[in-house]
View 1 (tube, rainbow, N blue to C red):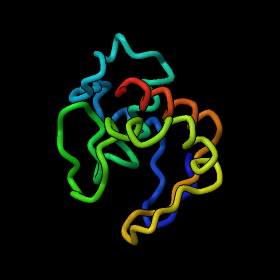
View 2 (cartoon, rainbow, N blue to C red):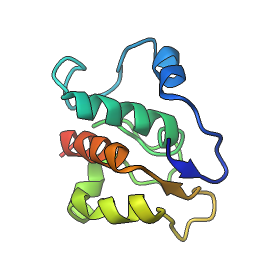
View 3 (cartoon, helix red, strand yellow):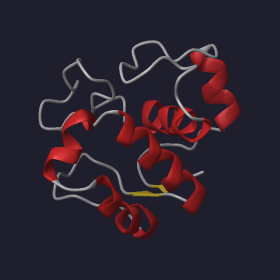
View 4 (cartoon, one colour):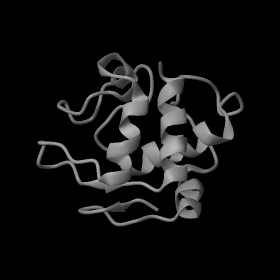
Length: 117
């Protein structure tokens, strides 16, 4: 699980159970069309990011200053997030917690972000 401040860790099993095994609202492709990596990336995005960021292709972000994930690739190649996610993603925005992901989680999260391009 990612190491983070300000938000308690959830087990992947608990997250999948809470989602009811569905990926409703994800616009890039149906859950059946997403690769296993991207499906795991959806769970990561919903668990740690979805409270503030839009994680689909159409919804606005719940927090207006949080960029929708569908726009991240317009700012820079999503692969550039690999190192910050491993070392601890920190922004100048005070309400965003610091996230640090394991290598497998980073690959899954990047695979998911690529489905939004």
